[in-house]
Image 1 (cartoon, rainbow, N blue to C red):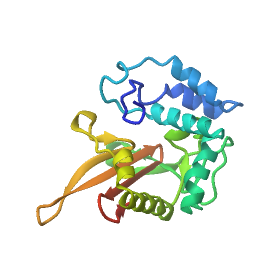
Image 2 (image 1 turned 30 degrees about the horizontal axis):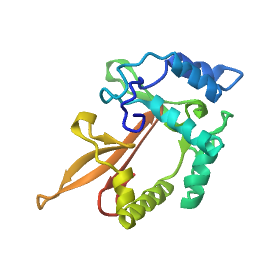
Image 3 (image 1 turned 90 degrees about the horizontal axis):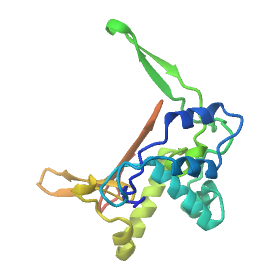
Image 4 (image 1 turned 180 degrees about the vertical axis):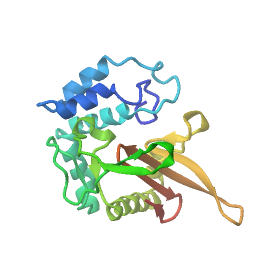
Length: 219
């Protein structure tokens, strides 16, 4: 249900939890996060319908780490980053330090009467408390390596692809296992399936798409 967004959990925890963590002298632990989730009211009964939830991603990250007996960051590193050669990708740690080379996030502030827009640099916030829902810093090239690795595995192992890349249904907003599905119609009338996902935080946005059945990625 977490993988298919049918858990009933809301999208995010109350903003006060995230903002409070930035100014606290102690970074919330995994158990702190779980305790807050336990007190969070469900939007609907688990399994009843689709409801996108970043909290679900956070819990999945915690589950993976506990299965491996490691932190979420160390699990991601040993399972994906090192084997895939993604040397310019990292998960933010417990200290609110800005990774070297990180692009500065800008917040647009529009002046009244259409007199212009001022882009204000944002402070670097700590995303470590949200685990699998974000806080990963990467590059276009590393994301290309990740896409290519998944594509090659899917091509060489159809049973694996069928299990891990199920196509989402309209009742689930065409979402399944981390991907939204759609069809791209080419000039000859064919429709090519596309898997994609996007995300954003204040000052930043990202998008990753892959045309199914070929090595065409848009990052």
